[in-house]
Image (cartoon, one colour):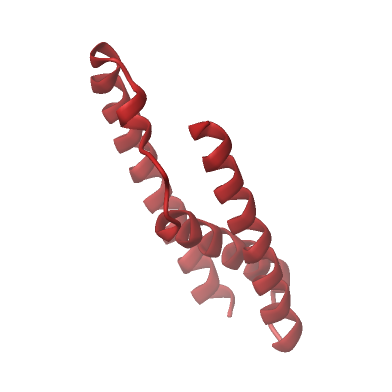
Length: 96
């Protein structure tokens, strides 16, 4: 149930991000439209996933022995996501 909900939120965010990116790239004359398209799509999908309401947290469905491991995985994912978001913003700034 939780996995399907998260996959749906991620898919909707990516689809909406692609639509928004396509419109932005179409309406503006960018030197590197593909770079802007992928960067904007990624940023929008991450933002959408972050702010989308979720019915329950993954942490609530774990056994006590799994919770410590999940926190380590979650923290690693947060750091990786922050690095890719920074890279996407930097690519937009450099290429626009």
